Length: 208
Image (cartoon, rainbow, N blue to C red; front, side):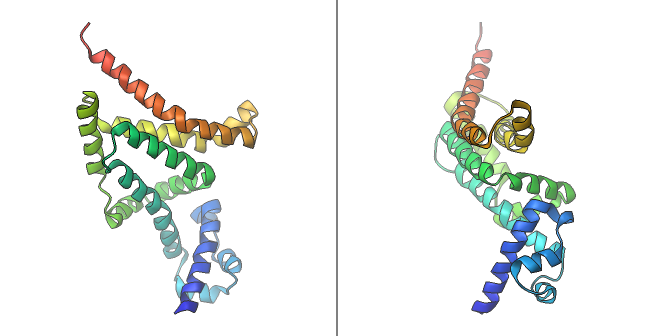
């Protein structure tokens, strides 16, 4: 049993490396087998085809993000504290593994139902998360806003700089060291940006 588990772990480690950097279409089972230090026949014994191996890697990759999202937004923290924790985690995670975002985006474009299946398996309720944000917006800030706008705005502010990292570095001639500092600064800037935007929305709703 230990040998079986060890072999499967080696396969998954190799598959993560190949899939994360090359995606589904660019990956080859022979390359994964070589990286895992096994022959291709043994690889197919554990995972009958590339699709089943990819599903395993994708599910575990996205599941970590999905679980953390639910953990943060369904906690008892104040809304802006949730935003700060969420931004801090996601910026740290995806700035270290920027290739994962493109991997996830490409995988979902190829097969959108993957996300629905993962959400069902992880028992993550997007509707409950949005309802929690809606309630806190009203209770803590007196705002009635579609919470989807808030969540999508946060995701956009966090994810776009990572996806556009090569473009940003090329246009502005930014070094890797400067980019790391930029991402660290995003952890403070993004929550403040969201808070100020909500305050601005609140002011717009007040009678003149």
